[in-house]
Length: 193
Image (cartoon, rainbow, N blue to C red; front, side):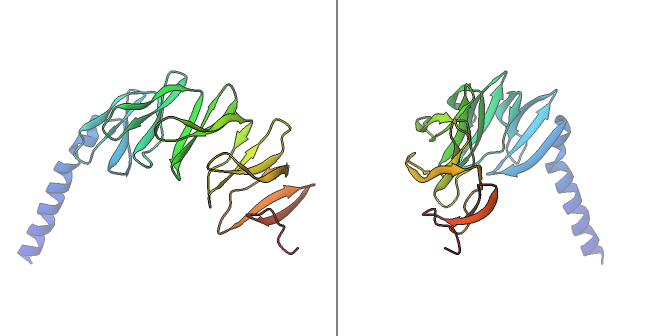
């Protein structure tokens, strides 16, 4: 019994010592890809499991790491930092989101598109709105407020004819066509046709 109690005490002591660094921050988020977002004096950055600051606590907002990078905002502009703490995509976007399937949704001048991890605009910023990639396709909205789907190269796969479109899941997506919700496959064929 003494051995068991000593083991519990040692575990609690090690855990409290290992996590004592959390007191240095106003908020500590969950770890993603080995790094946790932290907040101090309304600024955010990232730390490793030992509490070592990897990304300086200077940003106004940030998303968790995804695919080795995190979207960060400084002032009114967004960019991306890598897991070594350096800015890897410049702060030049009005909005930015986490990487998903190798691409991240970004916006400038109220137009959305997608970039790769080198910062190259793979899908030009021409859409009034965009969803997230799933099953190799993303729902995007044109200037006429109609939704369709493009692939990772920006090629139109399903035409712009929906008033709303959800992401694909297992080859099926829900869309709103002429005020009616229907499901389609990745060729745009309505389920049940």
